[in-house]
Structure formats: C-alpha cells, structure tokens
Image (cartoon, rainbow, N blue to C red):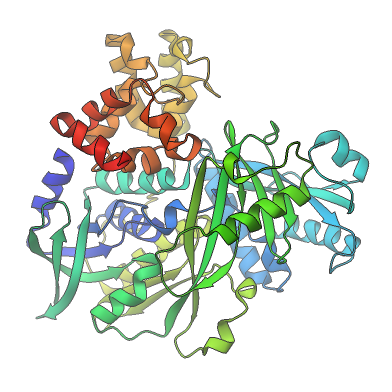
Length: 535
C-alpha cells in the first residue's frame, strides 16, 4: 500500500502536464505514451485499474472479422494492422491462435462466399498469420469431436490473436510502464469534477479509501473514463461531437471443454459470433450483445440460459452444461461510439455498430475525450493522444519520436533465460503448471523478473506455489504487494491475476496459503481484507 500512499501525496505537486481520469485500457496507454515521451503525467481511477470494461473482454486481440459483413473494410484493415503490431511487440503476451469455425446449413450467406471472405480477411491482415484452411465435416469430426455436426455444412480455420494471461493484467502492464517513466498513478481516487482557472484545470479528487479530498492541477485534462466518459463530460460542462451507447456482453467460465489450444467459433441464435475460448485448464464461452442504459450491469438468468442453450446446441457435450458447471462469470458493457445528434432509432442495431475509437480534442479548453476502442487498437490510442499533446505544445515532449511500448529487447530476454537456466529455475516449476516458470515470470514481469530470480536464488521457498490450485508463487505475491498497488484482495485475485476466473470463491476461500497471501499483501489488515472479499 506504500506505493499508492506515496503517489497520492505526490498528486498535490504544483502542475501536471496532463491528468488522465480512468485507468482502463484507454487511460493506461495514454499515461504510458505521454510519460514515456517525457510529459509529467498523473492518472487516477475511482476503482482499481482495469476495474470495469477492461476486465470483462473476451481476452482476444482480433482484427474484427465480423465487420467484413457490414463492409467496413477500412476498419478491418486498421484493426488487422494493429493486431499484427501487438503480436510483434508483445511476443510473449499476445499470441496467434487459430479460430475453428463451423457453418450451419441454411446460413444467411453461401458457404463458398464465407470461405472466400476468410481469404480476404487474411489479405487485409497483410498475410501476417497462417493462411485459412477449409474444413470438411470429416475434418471437424476428427480434429474437434466435441462439435455437433448434425446441422453443419462444413467450416474453416483462420488466425487471430489472444492474450495469454488476462485483459486486466495486460492493462496493468501499461500502468506499470507509466509508473516506470515517472507517472504518478493511484487507484481508488475519484474525480469529483474539474474547473478551469487561469488556463489550468483544477480537479477535486477524493481518496475513496481514506475519504480525504484534495486538488490536482494540470494543463490538460484527459477523460478516459470508459463507459462513464459522457457522465464525466457532463460533470465538467464539456460538449462533444460524440457520445456512447452501451452494449452488454457476458462470458461464462466452465471446466475445459476441449484440450486443443484453439478458439471454436460459431454463429449464435441471434446472429453474432459466439466463441469457445481456451483459458488454461478452463474454457470461456460467450457472448451476448444486449443494449443497456447504465454502465453497471450484472448477469441475468435469461443471459445464462442464452449462453448455455447455444453452447449445448453447438457442441455434443455429455452431459450438457448446466448452471452448476459455471465457475465464474464475466459481465461488462462495450462503449460504442455514435454521433451526439444520433437518435435512438439510429443506434438500435447494435450488431452493426463497431468497436472503433474516437479521440476528440477540444484545444480551446485543453480537454481530450476518448470514446470506444478495444484492446486490439490500444497502441494507436496512446499515439494519437501524445500527438495531440505535442501539437498543443504541452510539456514540450523531449522524447516524442521514441517508442513507448513493447517488451524488453530480445537480448535482455536471452540474458534472463540464460541466468534462469544456470540456476535451473524451471526445476522449480509446479507439476500443475501449464508452462515453465522462466517463461511465465518473463512474460508477466519483464525486467522485474531478474529481481525475482535473485529472490528465488537466495530463498528457494520463494518459488513455492502459495495458493493451492493456482500457479502463483510466493515471490509473485511479494512483487504484487510492493509494486502493483493492491488495495483490495479482489485487485489481486481478479485483475493482477486470473485466479478468481478459474477457481470458485469457495475453493479459493478454503485454499491452503490464502491467508498467508493476505498477510503478504496487507500485513496487519490481512483478516479484514479477507473478510471484505469473502463476506
């Protein structure tokens, strides 16, 4: 907690070049880009980092093949380029994965038409991934026997990408990058509104934990509040050319359906793409697309039934999945961008609205609003924001042309792997782990993995899995306690890790090691934080 407390005390610094409100993917990349280019940046979020929309995605970084149907080829071209860029710059985190798609008889488009569409999609992707492959019913039966072929005409296989860990962890990597570049960031700090005096934004902020209020001064105000962007603009009397409409999506986590590391893709009964996504020893299934008015949503019984009905129709599962098989749920809203003057009639067809982003700049007020977006396109958001700030002459960005994203250089990774091999780090890998310990520590922590290597060398107990049934070892808990601003137990279980997504609450609660984990994370407040989460 010391890192958070120290950062909150720094928020009273005279004047920041920019204050970013919102610690989701848009806010995280904005802060990382600006601080990486030399600006003096602060970032606050009323909850935890990635605590809203950015923790409820499908964990896919895909080029938007669904937008081929609406003929939005420029968006597909751009998203495929962004996907490829992520794979190149985060080779340990963003990985190519095959999508195994089955087409039902009588589908709204001829099979050959869809098959040709996959090749066009591959071309839009600059032929960067493996090429598509045609699947006859025999191929599907042999390679994925779990697929129900009763009404299938065939299928095809194509490539996109996914996040090896989880979306919230990926978002935090940008927060960590921003912190390393001098950004002052704090979670559970709420903006209560901003006013402008003598050309400077003055934001009233409240520490949600202590209840204390204070002011933050900045030359530029960046509204990256995700689905709350419109609310915050209204609070600050900002009129914009865009607004959000919200679409609710859910995913259900169940035990592993197929051991193959590929995504099974179908068209659900409502016409949208429906995925069966690998998640280690578990499987993520969904999703829905329901218009909603408010950002805070929950899974309904009707939605659970929709997902379970579709999965049981598409797959030949014995026995079929029921509500008792649900381990965890993901539920969030997708902020979709429309023009401010769009009527409700123009936004009723949610299946046709894209996940494009818009960075709207008000130079007169030195105010930026970020609308929409998705993980695939996140690096472009960071670049666009920094270009606007540079054009306005704020901060005189000394490293404007420098690259602010990506994993450490290959030479650094090679050195880490060499040291890990010399001390036989992989010999400490848990039998239940899905990958070698050296690979996992590098992917999650980069440069900081060297420090963890030293901790294990000094004390081999640091390599022990602390919470039974998970892959997280003792030194990872110390890392989280000191450098990842863990304020609540949920921050660690749900966002810095995906433990809460692959184990039931009861299993976690009764797991040997969970109380020691709380003691490492919270010290004397361990029991209080434990009770807060489980009660």
